[in-house]
Each structure stands twice: as structure tokens, then as C-alpha cells.
Length: 615
Image 1: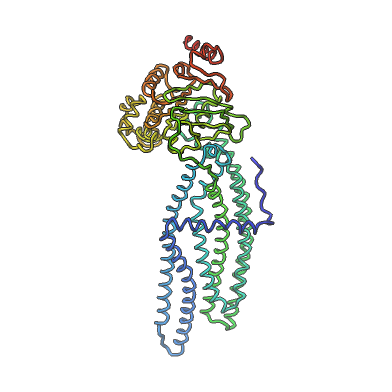
Image 2 (image 1 turned 180 degrees about the vertical axis):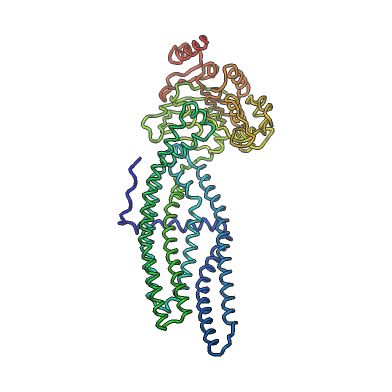
């Protein structure tokens, strides 16, 4: 990880400060499109809440002056007309009620918008994820962007809009207060602004420092989240307990926290220390104005009611200016965090060009022509000059050591990656010219690391064909083809049994049963004429494996089948066997042809057969 960010020396502060506000308009548009009615409500109540405090202050002056006048009338005439005082009291009471109602209305609408907007932003993040390539998900820097976007972006747009409306409200209040205060002295308005300015500058500067710290430590935050997952998930806790990793991982989790806490502590102390010191200027300014107004009152230049009003207006005006500048500082910070969201949402996406739904030569099947591929950020090619052809109705077995490039070849076939060089054709047409939806409809895949969905049994099968996701007849048909039906019927609720331990009543399966679920999932895609099985029976015993593949051969005679396996008893009946080593095809042929060749395949076959004989 790079060194921590250097704190801003202020040289380019103003440029950065104003440049980040470009996200404010987008945030307001986002809130507006989320709920126009609630946004209108926020605007109207903001206007009301901005004007009414000044009205209350003015009524306070009228109440005090009417009280003074009533006291003078009583001393002079011995009687008092209470109605003028009570009228102003009732009017101020009504204004206070309206202020309270406006504040409650703002709070309610903000809460509703927060829920709607949080969901909207999360949907945007997840929708964007569906358009990204596998390479982007396997990029650590991209994962940092995704982590930053998900952590803050769901709350920042509304926070920014709330501050924007709060700024408008305070601006209206300040104009109202200024109209009253200028009658006392224009200098009082200047004092209000100058007293609040130092705190604002400090807050804005430290907001930028906090954001740069947040971006810098994203990898540490992600590692802490990962360790938390490992220590608290059922699919990892077995090894953690067995290998005694709990203390080690928990200590690493604590160390990351203490490192992050130390950085937070340093920033917090600097931020609050400077905030307190500069905040004293505002306090001194208020009491200086307090003394000024008192002296003016004693000298008879203003009435007691005016003194009360000016003190209230000065105090509320100071609070409004401070709140406005704090809102601007907060908007600056929100804009910084929104840059994470839009940096993620604007991540470039490779175009899924291609509209073809059929090729010119269906009899040609799948063809690789001198295909090479290197993973992003790697110097060593994963595949080099791969050329092979699989005709309809034929089966192809890929064998080789782990890391030899077998699964990578499947990722290229399914267009999860693009070849670095060469091309792949289906039915005589380059894969890039195929409509991606149509292409993937033709392919049924079981990856070695298939997903174990925490869903119903039937939904685990239905995931293989989204168009038939809830089709119970298709569930059963696929379960029978994948040999999962017998054990599924023995479960508590059959195909409606909840799988996994995440939800109440969930039932866990054995590794072999999960693989039958995955195999059945591949059979859900009934329109697929290409079946890819990546170690589909690794968790099954030899007898179950033999049964599976005999059954499998009977039901895939019209399809192109690609099988990846380390068990030679599984691959020996394939029409074509390709041995891959270090990303290159080193041998190819039928099982008998490769044994006759007496090369690497024959060595591996005899070595494995000898192991079975020893058993």
C-alpha cells in the first residue's frame, strides 16, 4: 500500500473546493427523479421554515414594546388594554406552531426520501455490476472503487440535498434577519459573516483531509470486512476452528482497527481542536454585539423591545450563518464522497457488440483458431495458440494440471473474457458477432466453484434458466436428468426445501448432493446445445461418478459436450481428449490414440490407474 496522504497545505484548496460541487446538480436530479412529490414538499417547507423565525423575532419585539407601553398606560391612567399584547402573543404562538410543523414535516419527508433514495442508489450500483466484465471484478483496484461506492453513496445524495435545502432555508432566514438587523447597523451584518468564516474554512479543509484518508485506506477496510466474513460465516468457520486460525485472524482484525482508529483520532483531535479555537471568535463576536446593543438601549437609542429583537436576531442570524457555512462545508464533503459513486457508475464497460442469433455453418460447431489469452496485470499467458474444433454431437475432454488453462478456455468460450489474440467461432461465426443473450442461452455450464444459492431447492435448479426460474415442472424434469430427484424427494419439503443455513429452516447438503443440484441446473437450460462440465463430480465417489457419466452420455448425444476432469476414468470415453500444459495443447486424440502415443497422457493415466490398484 502507498504511504498515507499528505494533509492539504491549502495551496490548491479553493480550486478543489469549488470543483467538487459539480456533483450537487446530479444529486439533486437523482433525488428529484426518485420522488418529485417529496422533493416539492421539502422545497415548500424549507421556504416556510426560513421565513417564520424572522416573523417570530419581529412579533417578540412587538410583544415587549406593547408590554412596556401597557406598563406606562397603567401608571398614567390606572388601566390597561390587554388585547394588543394578547393578540401578538397568539400570533407568535401560531408562528411557533407553524415552525414546529414545518420542522416535523421536513423530518418526515427526509426519512421517507432516505429510504427511497438508499434503495435507488443500491439498485444503481447493482445494475451497474451486471454490465461489468469478469476482468473488472477480478481487479483489486476496481474492488476498492466498489467498496467505497457501497459504503457511503446510499446516504450521501440525500444528505447533500438536505444540506442544499437547509442552505436555502438559512439563506432565506439570513435575508429576513438582515432586513431587521440593518435597521440597527449594517456593521452588525458584517460582524456576523466575519465571525463565522474561520470555522467554515477549517471545517472544509478537514473534510477534504478526511475524504483523502477514506480513499487511501480502502484496501485496509476491505481486508477488515473480509476477515469479519471469514470469522463469522458457516462456509469458513470449520477450517478456522480446525486450524486454530481464530486468534490469528481476530488479532489481524484488531490491528487494522487500531491502525485506522489512530488515523481517525489524529484527524478528529485536529479538527475539533481548531474548530473550538476558531469557534471562540464567534462567541466573542456575539457578546461584543450583545454589549453594543445593551449600550444602545441604555442610551435610549433603541427601545427595550428592539433590544430583545436585535439580540434574538443577532443570535439566530449567527446560528443561521454558521449553519449555512457548515452546510456548504458538508456539501463539499458529500460531493467528495459522491465522486466515489459516479466514479464507479461511470466505469467504462466493454460493448457487447453482436446481434447474430445463428451462424452460417451449424455443422462446424465450436472452433478455436490460434487463441491466446493473458490475464490483466499478468506477464505470463494463460493460453497460447490454442486451436481445436468440436462438432455437434461430439464430446471433448480437457485434461491437465491445475493452472494449466482449462477453465480459462471455458471463460473465453462463454465470453466472460475476450481472447488476447486469435478468434473463437460458433457455427462458423465469430463469437463477438453473436448476440450475447442468445450465445449464453446455448451454453449450459457447471463451474468447479458453482454457486450454492441460499434459496429453495427448485430455485437452485431454476437459476439455470431464468425464463423457467419458477417452473416446477421444469424443476422436476431437470432434477431427474441430473440424478438429484431421488434425494430431493426425501427432503422435508421436496423441491420447496430451503437450502443453506442463512435462513430459518434451511437444510445443508453434502458436497455430492450439491454437485447433483449443479448438474441438474445445467439440464434446466433445455435449449442449450453446448454443455460444459468443469470438474462436475469432484465431490462424488467413483461409483456415483460412473453412474452420473453413463446417464449423462445417454442424454447428451445431440449436444456438444466439454468436460474438464482429473479422473481419467471419466474422460476416456470422450470423442476427443486434449491435454493442456502451461497454456498450450501438448497432446490430442482419443483415449486409445493417446495411450498408443505413450506420452504425458499415458504417464498420467497409468499413474492414476496404479493408485486405484493399490486401493
